[in-house]
Image 1 (cartoon, rainbow, N blue to C red):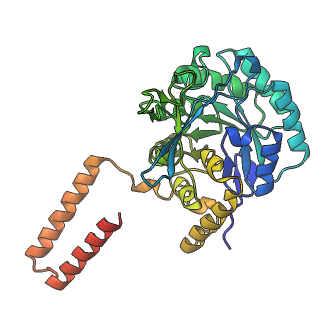
Image 2 (image 1 turned 135 degrees about the vertical axis):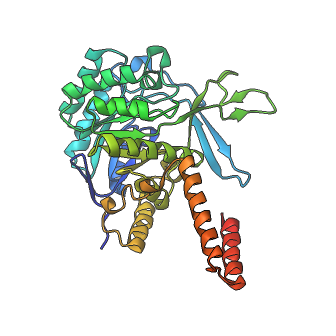
Image 3 (image 1 turned 90 degrees about the vertical axis):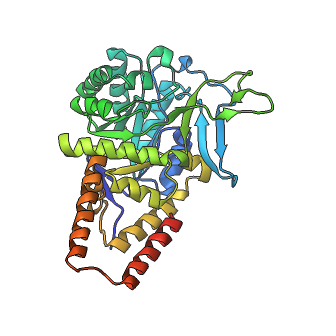
Length: 373
């Protein structure tokens, strides 16, 4: 029998499905709801020491629709939690006292101050959290304070801050990467050098969701103005898969044993299977929960188990990273194809040519595959 249970960085999870940091983990009530519905772990909404500096606006969401009307893209300009740090500590304790079946992970973000990071880590640990995710990746969250992606896009600063955290942390630490860089391998490598146990990838993509053609104002419009926000939902999945593949390759070659939590556009168990095949140990969902609700995890589990049983995989580890060896360079693709064509030509010259019926059958299959794609 296949099993979804997995252990990641010492965290025993009933399944690899994780609530990503954001609105679905914004307080005690919704976090407990997520655990009741069967999520393997919950990453709470990102917190900092001084909530008074966090002021949200409204509206702060914008949706991108396909021609069918389906929401395929979602932009937000929402900031980190605006609830007091002490309130979060109290709620962390209450959640852990209830003995949830999965892991409670605190997402934290602070300014470039060693004392602030260490205080936050130590106090959250005292409240009982199982792990940390360091938010180095929010594309619009408080850049004027050098927080979020403003910090995460600089590998040197990121490595230094991760070093501060690792000196204080007694539980696993993941660093969440921004996709708004040329090479995600560079900040990921910096965080891993500093000793973090895992990488989370990716956060939202800096974007402008669109312009209202009646008012001529960009959206979401606040007092007639807007600011670029973070793009998520199904449309970002191909980008997230590519970046997770790149991070997974770095881990496999340079930091064996470290872990990867993949996210970006996950809306099904099949999506989760793709992220795991490209090296993810766990799979996070945030916007998907906002679109479809917490119970979607049950369908995720059924779909992922069906995939595993089809291929006779018993555990998540059996297929983690199984698709990574099939990536190579374009130059190598050219070389392999040339060699194959040369081999075919040699066979033809030697009289090893298939009959016309076989060739037509191949052509039909190729045309059918093209139409299916």
